[in-house]
Image 1 (tube, rainbow, N blue to C red):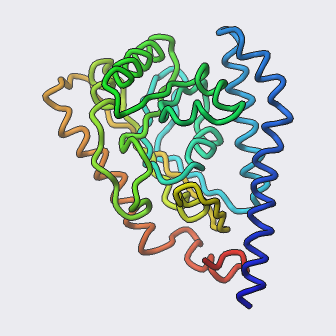
Image 2: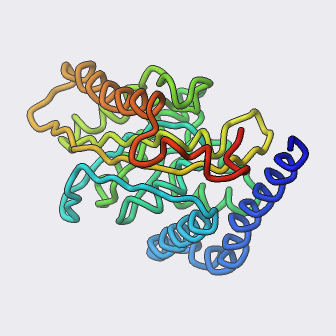
Image 3: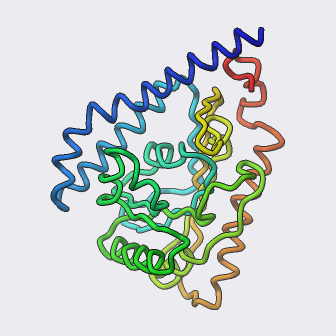
Length: 266
């Protein structure tokens, strides 16, 4: 049985990697052309959304999207999701509409082919560098002034306790929200780390249902920077509570996911 499970895991991993990489290579020539001009960036983003959604669909796992807010196309938001896996950005692209901008770590810009596109289309930051952090903040402000919604992972990195305990939040997204008087939207992705765990460069895909919860916006009108710690704590509590709930009880029909097949066994 162990041999069969191992073979099953290898087959499923190969299947997922193939369907993740193939859409990118098919669309890369179009992205490479469209990324040359700023006015075409929105189209590149749409291609990335197609890439993400098609790959997720071919992973053959159910995806539960739970909206606890009413998305207003006329309203700008700053989305603050937990960070648990390299699957986070594809799931966010699949779920949240509009021309988003992401703030991600600078190592993404070093990925072959995709890195150059990410560097132009989104915002990269080396959190160990004060200069890089300052530049990313300025770019984030510019993004909001251009009317794009912003996605920032307040943890800054994938924690070793993904799916259990959040890392302490950075101030950046909350400072931006208060300065621009924009609502903060907490986002919880409780299962991404189970499907694609961060294993220090080792690739391991494990079949698991996916879920994303887009919580109610938290208004910042009238807030000042003195309210930043309270706002940060409120968002932290919303996401941590949701993660804890899913960590101990797999809700919405996911409690029996381990019985669905050999690929679901860790």
